[in-house]
Image (cartoon, rainbow, N blue to C red; front, side, top):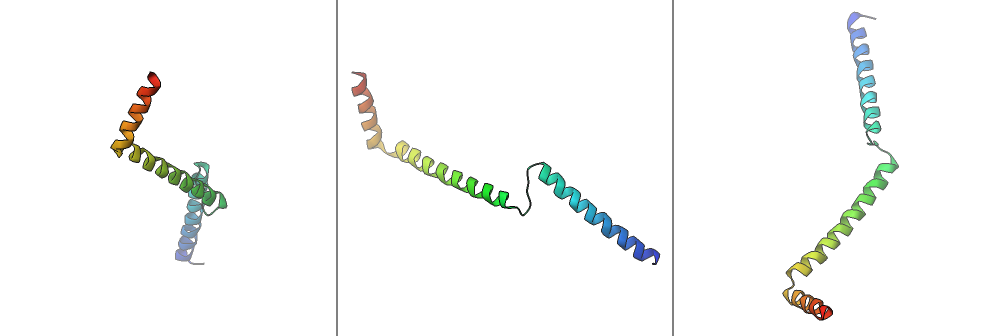
Length: 81
């Protein structure tokens, strides 16, 4: 084996070792590369975002609907009496 072949082999080994270390470090921090847990977590987060969007839409409708706001104020006043 020549000197340059040895350099290339050592470089390849170092790259593979570095990539594995990065993957393990990422998994330690909570990132899972290519696992089913990641897709399940992603699906759960998508459902949560969709629920939050629905809630925001309801809050926007309540805030912008003047008639409903006056009805709500009148109902609150009638409950106070």
